[in-house]
Image (cartoon, rainbow, N blue to C red; front, side):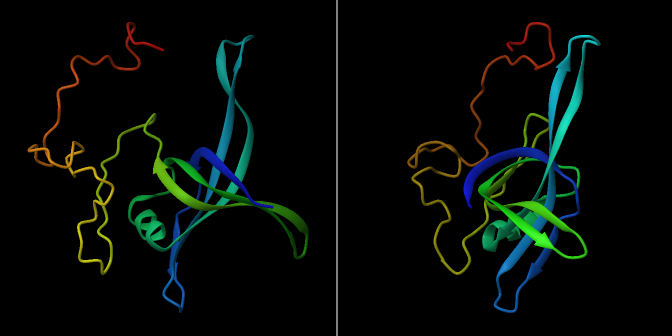
Length: 162
């Protein structure tokens, strides 16, 4: 059974990186996703059930993940879900995600993106019609140019929109 899923959680183990004899990079880690619910009696948020996943990434994604992910990082993972039974001394079930994408959850902090060059291509890694500056391909703005978004309200300020 494979399903496409998106899971928000925290990396619970140090990411493990290896390269197979065939040269395929693999990075994997355990992800815990904890549902939160509001307790009206106490007026506080509480942890509810926790779901555990083994996340595996391959090739370019594995190389990028190994270079920027760490235990404790809040992340969003999308990929194919597989529920597998295993047998050993005991019997159990594990939920595994073969990741298509992994990113830091920016609701908990900030992150800086660095584009990875395509190995051996000898071409500009920007192939989607968007310049590195984020503007139009013909834009004169350099990669450090940023438009002023105007006044910003922090999420925790009294006047912030929900």
